[in-house]
Amino acid sequence: MTFAKRLLVLVLLLALTVPMLACGVGSTPAENRRSALRVVDYDARMMVDDLALFMQIDRPLRNSRWVID
Image 1: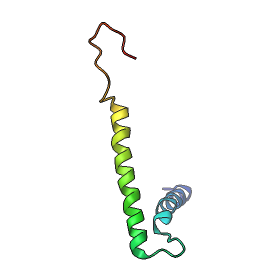
Image 2: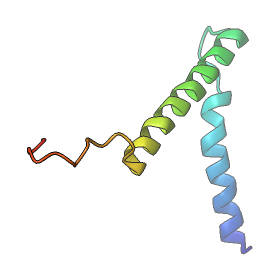
Image 3: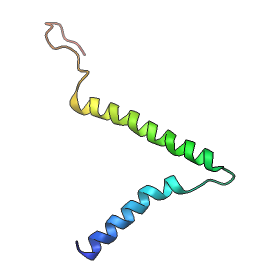
């Protein structure tokens, strides 16, 4: 890898991990952990929706002669 690619990978990793590690003013470690777990849970739920939309799993049936909008 070139130096620029290594630097870019490092910056991207930091950009993804720092918000999860940063603590808010007046929050306890338990609150920080709960917040991080909530973000992971939301991301997992959104991933399911994204995959369903991408795969078009829940499309309406197309075997009717009537137009379904």
